[in-house]
Image (tube, rainbow, N blue to C red; front, side, top):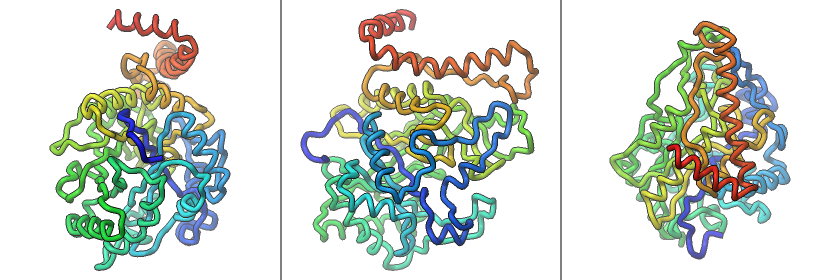
Length: 418
């Protein structure tokens, strides 16, 4: 699966959360039977027109201990152009959490999806209920942790489905800035993998929580993790919330543009995109709500990211990471929901396989129901038209795919008016 001549069109890798099954630790910390669905289903809309809660359609409120669910997810992901999953890996000085779906995937040959791992190396706290300083389980970084951690990954690295780049296993670290001596850690990991017969490994630093430099850690590359490190205006004061809101409200297209244009000191960066974002199911009025996360805006961002990656790294094997396949409590998922159904997935496939018919991002109209500007029938109608037209554009692009001659004419017409 990872052998043979590499494809030089970027592979699309979606981050995958394994929180959708109960574990004893979560039962103790959050209550019996807690899973990610607990947060998802308690969400409420905070202003007129606010889309919450996000509720699943095709897969329902699934349990990742069920193999059939994973097989269905893989089948759908492949159908719509996803080339692999990057599973979040929770390891705390030898204690692993949320690992049952991952271990079962490794043992199940029918889970035929390429995968890699991202070590989520941060403390678990009660941040979801604002008790940020109450640590549930900590990353202790004990003297033997570097060696024991990399030993735990050898069964995954040895699996033929594990994602490699230029023949080398690809590992992401979510917060390398937390490692006491990242260069020493990287050296230990590399030495052990050579001695264990794995050979070289590719270490990738997630660009999160202000970090924008992978080279300082002795790593090989960095990966964008939007909306982390976004530099955008907070327009929360332009929205009439039902109750005081202390969070952050940026616009999707502004975030996307900033990432498309962003340059880094060290250039081996894997680009990242997200379909939409709203983590108020977890954090309530302290959350981040991104306005304008529609299938059409996502399609344009992904299509432009693919195009620019191919221009910047011609003839090279590259990945683009999508955050995420199933971050439901962050309003950030490609899996179908009851509102958009398969539209984000269809947008993914169009962006990957054909030149986009989209000319740019759809503008966010701030005078929507819930905005502080004066309400008028005209302004409300303008918002409705702008919002739904962005969805219609995505549906139209899918329809045109069935009629290649019409699609060519539309593309020619769009080029004429640019």
